[in-house]
Length: 337
Image (cartoon, rainbow, N blue to C red; front, side, top):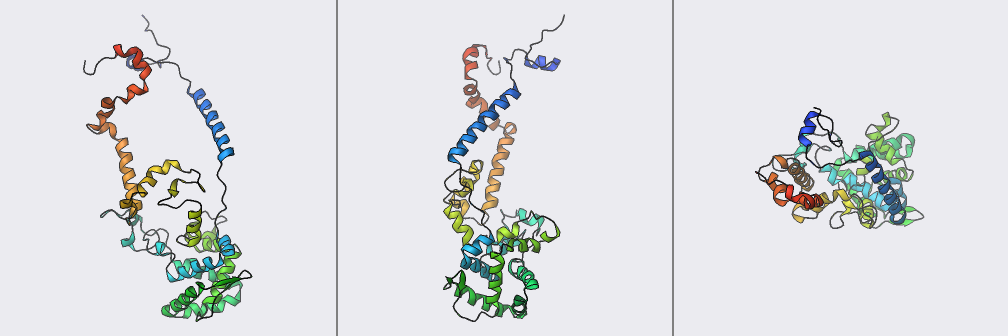
């Protein structure tokens, strides 16, 4: 006698045995996917047309050098002094060998496991290296650069420090930065060279070349280009203007301006809003550890005693399948019966 096969149950002896008596209905997954895709596409297009966020232009070294030349020079002198890029200089791996600066939780410091994978020497890689390339094609800058490199570290720092302080009183005249006179040594012409390099739009290319980008037709590593203004005012001021700072602007989940962005990162941003976490030197690692533990808890929830009984105790499934339980509540066997 042939077995009676439910048309909605997959053909197979085990499937028939396990699913017999379970209410089932036909479901077209492909059609459902197409319908949902079309509906979401229509909603996305309409919302984008009505509420689409503005496309804010990319902040480049050229735009900063042209629109904020004094800020550009302050950033550059700050790099030579170890100020504006202190976040990189004191970051530890993967940029520097200072393993004590790596974020850690007790003895655990993941950044130290791989060591220095992107070595960066701010003064050389961001300023002196690009200046060396400029000096190769413009002999006017070769002598000042040679004089600067030949001077002692104390003398170089004194020149740069004097120029950096003079920039606080600098003015713009005809697009040129006018700095009060002082003992700058060769720093003034070198800063003029850096400003010209930035305004020409060639600084990013010079930075890419410093990290090996010149050996490839295209460079996809923009680490140094982004780090040039990492802690400088051009990035910070723009982020503040676009409401993309961290605390208290929730910038990590914002698009430009007031528009929503990566909303799925809200749990991470929420943790950064807690002062006890945000004020820690290892805040990033702490947030990652908390979120990793949270997702691990969800992943292994069915295997954790007591917690794996929560679905049965809370009976959330009855809210989801309320219509079925309404019609078949009397046929549901009690647990353990």
